[in-house]
Amino acid sequence: MGSVWQQISATFVAEFSDLKDVGEITTLIIRLLMAALLGGILGFEREQRGKAAGIKTHMLVAIGAALFVLIPQRAGLSDAELSRVMQGIIAGIGFLGAGAILKGNNEQDLKGLTTAAGIWLTAAIGVAAGLGREASAILCTLLALVILLITPKLVGLLDVKEKQ
Image 1 (spheres, rainbow, N blue to C red):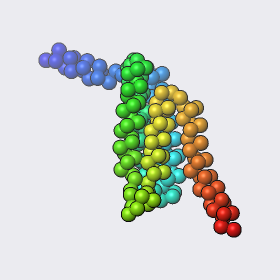
Image 2 (image 1 turned 180 degrees about the horizontal axis):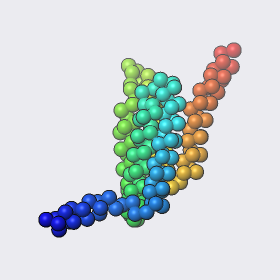
Image 3 (image 1 turned 60 degrees about the vertical axis):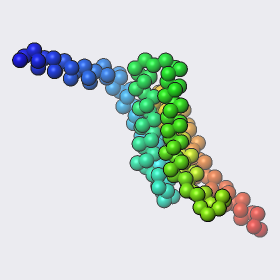
Image 4 (image 1 turned 120 degrees about the vertical axis):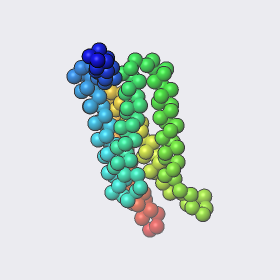
């Protein structure tokens, strides 16, 4: 009976052995938390504007994208195999974004395009964080915030000048 429990114990330990040391655990935590934080920042902006895809959606998309590239990368997949994983993420997020787009009665009446683009960009930021490109992910998040926060104000100023 002791050998059965030893085998079960060894199997259990082997199943949870993908994080071999403190360095790997730290890497995983940093990358996933960075993805969650940056996705949350973009999601907070969208939630403040009353959009359906808010903090939770953006955080989950970013973490999911990060995990989809982090695990294969840590498992030793080649760059070619990892690029196929990223292609799948890009296409899959496109379907999620398509669900956020609503078409009205005429072709001019489309809603949700910015939300869909934001979800897509959040996935890209998650991929960058998952690959260990945190500085690139932060820079992209800041650029997205500038676009989301400042562009509407600039467009509003231009509309006022045109009406005068």
